[in-house]
Length: 166
Image (cartoon, rainbow, N blue to C red):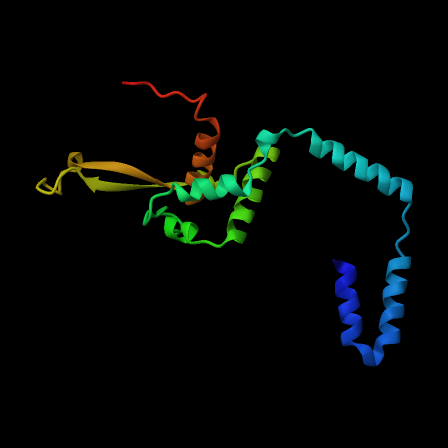
């Protein structure tokens, strides 16, 4: 990828092409490396990646299925993001979302915005006295990405997750 960019840049600077190409050659030849070290590094990285099982990988289809199960017009109350933003997103968004969630699972880390909820008070009825605080109930507006992640987990493990019939 970098080599292709450098070739394109060399073509663009064709007036000074020879000095540009020689500068690139100097740059590439000034960083020595041992082929055996690179091969052992590749094996080490590959084995580290292979340690993670398939449960750590969130696929594009997992993300699309989770997003398609979201309700339209719901807000997260924190960032101003709506479920409609995600539902109407392009395929590249789902690729990035699946990569983000896979990284979270592999590294065991959840970013702070995923954990934030906003509590909104809603009156218990239309005819209640609004000045009495006991006539309100609170609801938590969770992160849209948190909802997508929750749906991925529920879709993946619905057979082992049980809810009580209370």
